Image (cartoon, rainbow, N blue to C red; front, side, top):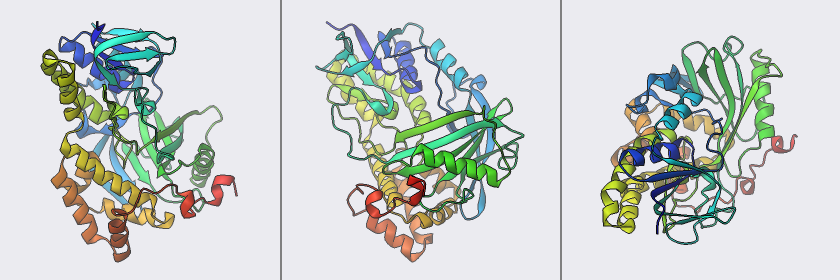
Length: 405
């Protein structure tokens, strides 16, 4: 006998949004998390055009004009929205009316519709959703030997102190200048306003297999800031980011993967929140419509919503792009992004945001190919036919900075 209609495992933004949407559809819903009331610490942002229509203005901490620096500086023409994370958490918590919020850590799913907790308790549900983020507690398949990871180390400073790098009204999406003074694997500065007179300055490794260590990122960030005359106070709050960008699709027979666990993470940016918030009501409506025909029918329908064939194809193209980046000479990475950000606006937008537009993705990639130099063209083509790179270290890309040399 089942306990509820839908059990969502993972109480982050994606899981909370889906649980709330399921409850609003009349489904008896439970949300399981090890610490449901724990404050969310990550910084979330998305392009303003991606904001869900039902997200209240109070959740937006700041809006800024996006710009990038590769070999030259470019203004993207899009506004970037940074979310007020406590307000987002409060907003989604308020929508959990009618949802049973449970405290516990899931360790697996021993049978269809069953979730086992660390204390041996078993919960039963017609539909089980794994929204447990990169940990994917209900995915029984082994992880890749060495994942490609995005890593970042950031400091939160007063806007006045950060003025040499970030002017009022701007969001610096990427700054690939090597102002940190180190050779080796390239990193960029991500600098955004947080509202309330504060900004986040974050040294970021877009993707590497394995991820670039925090010690390297921290050292480079402080060196970059010193180059621009910025001296952070010892009391400055920090942010550490570390997650895989190449996890396989969640294919456990008895569950639906959602959010970062799906994974809805964009292989080229690491973003997933906008996709999760937009998909949550669609997945909930699908479950409500098909559950009367049985759990199997509802599971199959929900999986098709999360991963329609078009989204699978687009994700595959982006994974090819990720492998091309991982195989690229570190010195060539800023030049590649110079070419990418020179694409027409529609192509850049489609590649960075559209998850199921096959024609649009192919057009963007064809345009990039046509405008690229001969060596870059050859690299992009050959990367599509090569096996997954086991490790950047295997390519001799373990630079001296990894060991402090």
